[in-house]
Length: 81
Ligand code: SF4
Ligand code: SF4
Image 1: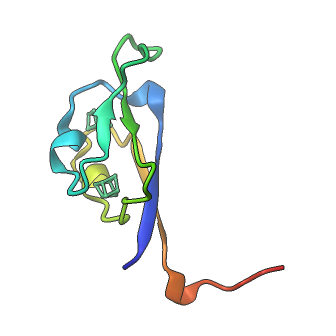
Image 2 (image 1 turned 180 degrees about the vertical axis):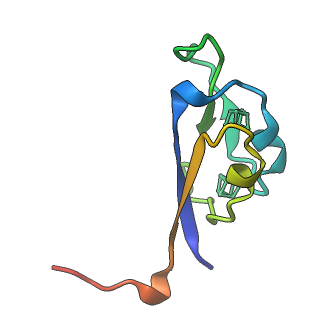
Image 3 (image 1 turned 90 degrees about the horizontal axis):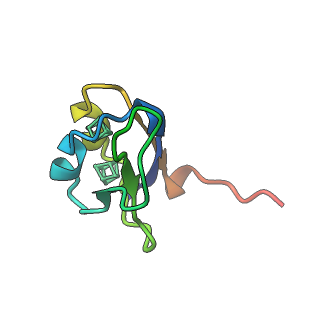
């Protein structure tokens, strides 16, 4: 299965929590550490076990285009020295 990760444009997030409700892996949560430049608690990825599949559901539901998804497909990977 492809693996993925996301990049969060933290200061665009309005803390609506929608993305946290759709992630099948349950690896999105609202920040416990503070607020962004707009005064909201932004979402953060907590994925120490590499569970993100790059499914894009979080990015698709986000109304503010905060999330960019990257997918790694090992079948296409090449070893580079
Ligand atoms: S791409 Fe999918 S698995 Fe990864 S954080 Fe978003 S919803 Fe979760
Ligand atoms: S859906 Fe978008 S705006 Fe809402 S919490 Fe997630 S990243 Fe932030």
